[in-house]
Image (cartoon, rainbow, N blue to C red; front, side, top):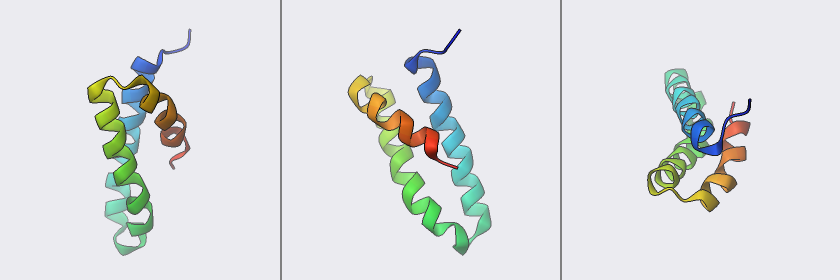
Length: 67
């Protein structure tokens, strides 16, 4: 059984927040990743908070691509 966007989206945000921590631990070399991840996660949190389904559909694949 696959998850709904409402279930999967917050999990992707959490996963990307863990990546942010990892990039910060890297130090200066992690700045490039942080420059992309932090605004993306911020935008995703707002979409999640507001229940903005259109934004969530747009942002979900972007979150999934983060490594």
